[in-house]
Length: 531
Ligand SMILES: [Zn+2]
Image (cartoon, rainbow, N blue to C red; front, side, top):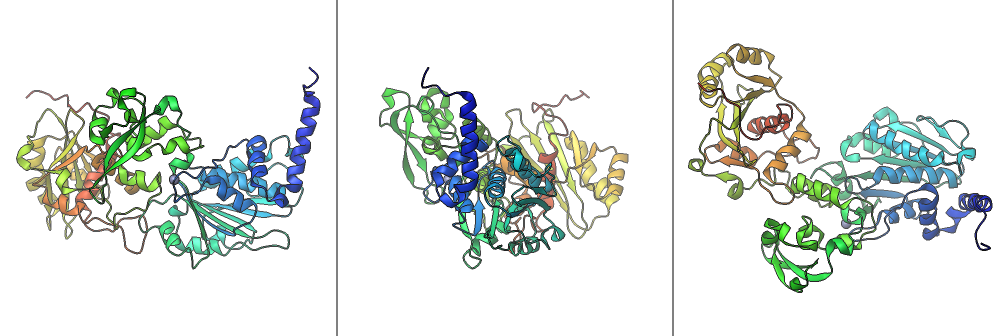
């Protein structure tokens, strides 16, 4: 019993340790002490391992920022990559360890700024620090007895115009306007005792968005770039999951079209140093063990075994198999969105277009139609049938210019409605008069959901999930849809809103996949009255 520590004394020593850190951590310049303090006292374990050769660990960013090794940070991280949480931690430890330090956190969306604030306050309210809080924290201003202050500011022109704190954060810049960002970048001013810093973080979603612009200009703007991805933040993959018998997966390189060998593991001794083509194992995962049975094998290639992060492996699998590869590559592996501005870069005529004669319309399957209005621009209509196997086929289209609405409805849309009897005819809500006319004429018309960004991600996930499943096909007669898929693009100058051209059938297709949840899920068949 003699070597047991009296809990009372332990707690006093712990408070002494905390007090020592508040006094000396900054001057110590010791990253190991810093990591220990954040883990044991603040309660966050920040990943410290660089897994991808071109990336860094999240802790490198925290340490460089806290110790003021760098003054301008450009952080690109994956979704769920801890960006907001890291800001919350940095705000708290800057305020605790740097007396008189003024901190401003700006969120592109208010919710983001509020979350960051919650992280900060959760740390400051710990019993070790509570005596330092001057009064109850407020989102507009939290004050500490050492003179430090934290403000959360809205990501608007007036929010970023005026105050000159030393430490400034901007979270999710991909969702803000360039002029606001420019104003933000000139906010930070050093004081006599606290150096200034500018910290910008985001996922990179768009090939020409604000994040890419900052990356392109990082040298002239003197930013140091920090990038990490899912492989730095995923929880370590244990041997009992991956197996320990070395073997190889043969993967075709999408760029060179050549085949390369990736070393992975299996749990089966017979697999020792054997080679397995990716398409063979991915079709029969249940027959294999270890890495060979994991849906992540193609992209992970044992990287998760080298990580010391926190993100759940099962959740990672769910994300990867539930989204399109373009979004996965950009937002989870932080690769440059490489579509040369095409909105649907994953559309591939040789995969997605099927001969018209290979599709037979079946009146018992679910059919959904969508309508975009036009006059000089065409009025466009897309017809999609959902098959019992889960696939969707766009099998017919209309693209009619210079038709008055009554003529369009009576002579063009009505015959198709009688022929295909769609379950729902979604329509752009911008033209309520035309919708009323369709209602009168007996169409099953319904206003479409208009969420461009969310809708585009849904269509992409039908074109191809990240793990390679194609679920949307276009029959060869839909020539206008095929042309739009090949030309619908983002503006060259940047931004996350596609150009308002080549988008008529693209809008229709988006309405259909974005409204699917609202019109109820279906097993592919329609309960159809018998005539
Ligand atoms: Zn990485």
